[in-house]
Image 1 (cartoon, rainbow, N blue to C red):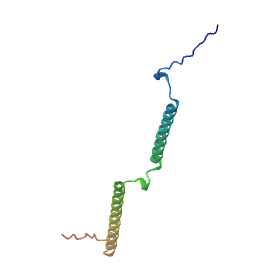
Image 2: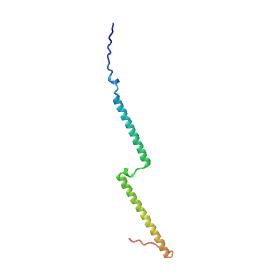
Image 3: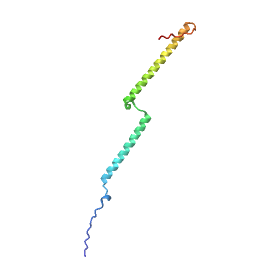
Image 4: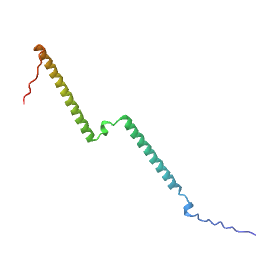
Amino acid sequence: VVVVVRIIYINMPKKWRVNTKAEEARMRRETQKMQSREKESSEKEERYWRGVSEAEKTKADKRREEKAMERRAAVQKREEARELLEKEQKELQNELGGRNVVPKVCD
């Protein structure tokens, strides 16, 4: 007696099946995202410790720096003028024999 056994392939429910290609792609995308985040954070930290370069500065930052440089130059110029004035006053005082010289202020 020969028993014929039919093998019936029972379809597994959809929720149990796994699309391997989709899973691989998903994993690849997630690793790329993680790598890009790590790279970005390391670049950010490196920029912080290295300092901001000239190319990365905005126009507003450049203008602020230029104005600050102008202010520093003006302060330095005033200091030089004041020192020159003091020097001239000392020379005048020496010429006049130590008398007090009061500069005349004109309105």
